[in-house]
Length: 308
Image 1 (cartoon, helix red, strand yellow):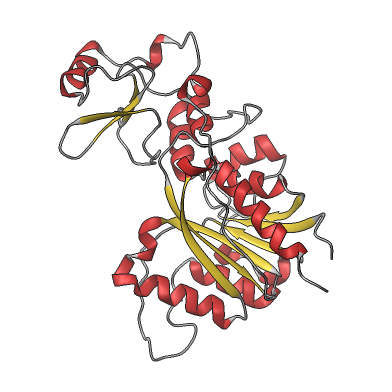
Image 2 (cartoon, rainbow, N blue to C red):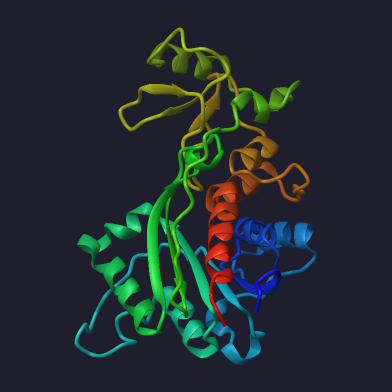
């Protein structure tokens, strides 16, 4: 195949950030799966399809054939037991096992997996080693690297481990960092509603603790464990479980729904279908779209070099 068009499946799909990245290089999604019903509503509003539910209850034979498997699989703790008991026991009970099962049954040409950076350090690196060993045992050439959204145009410090694999021997390299990052002035909305502004007491408390009182606006600050407030010309990583005031713009207000999506690199055409708290949660769970676009482009370049 010439890879000018290809098919993929979108597992643990969230609101579709990985899908957007691979659609940008000619991919067509033939199957999606997502457990969280709220995320499914946002996904359906934007892609016109309601993802299938719990992947643990979906047989591989019910998934159409595809070229690339994509998945930002949840970072639940791995319980690596029975290391001497064979191939499956090491990953059974984890959602990685579902990816492994589908790769084994469907044998696609390639895959791309995304997870939190800490996956590489979990259990002194053993968890990550097991994952790589199992992917390699399925016959894939596997590459992995921690990429930071800041390096790919996003105004957000967000480090994630990216794991890619190919059935054929390919010359793959991860994308080089971009030279330019989108400035905050381009992503911040004007004339923002009062409902996003924090109470004066919260604002004043933040400003008192601000590390650099003369830091130029616009900035986004976040509160660290020690209580100090650090301003930056970009956002700290959006998080699902963070407090309402985890990040503030100019220590005055919370980011709007559209601004959170922009911080993750979603286009302004992306529809907002749910209330603020749910969008905040979904953005914290999502991926930086420009990173996915850059990785997708590199994967396609590598796949196109295969002599069939």
